[in-house]
Image (cartoon, rainbow, N blue to C red):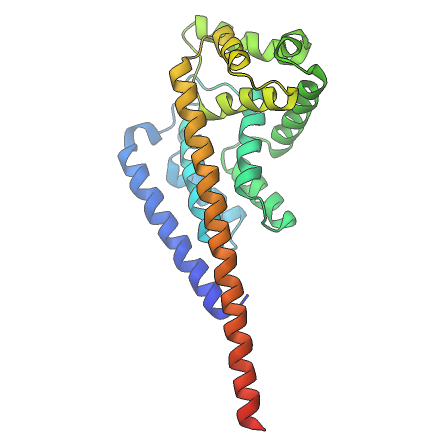
Length: 249
């Protein structure tokens, strides 16, 4: 990586920290753990960067930090309970955000991210893969309810909702939508059927899915811009080298 690019990514990284720290201050009381042990947003971020100390370009870093802060608040909430639907949603978001990045680095970043939350990267990946495969074989929203594993996950969420212990998260909602996508049944009525079964507000789901799609659109545009800047830098560097070679001959 060129010196100017390294400097840019380091500055962008600091900017990402600044932006996320502002968000964390707004959620100061929520950022404290209510789970099995005390952990703050700062603790989680420190673990992440200790596990993955390499600079991350701002187009990825800023979004990753926002996701990490949000997931920290979920993870250490008193009503948090891991769900394979949640894992399917998170893995879908993560993979789309990191699309285009070096594959080996993406795995290392994913492992550092999940480990910083004191959870298992292997469990997330395995559960997400298994749930998506089950949904694909189900082939419809009715098939999802007939699949033993998916039905169990939905019924567990429904039971917690009825007990007043269900923690609504964007990743669970995205996970539901992802399963419908894999089943090839994204009709609005199908989504209504699934969220009604669990007892989730339709307005909340619609809003969060809209925000999710908006983030992905912004990411796509930012990546395109970054690629254009990289190509421009390469051309300028080649031009400088050509001019230098001409002067020395």
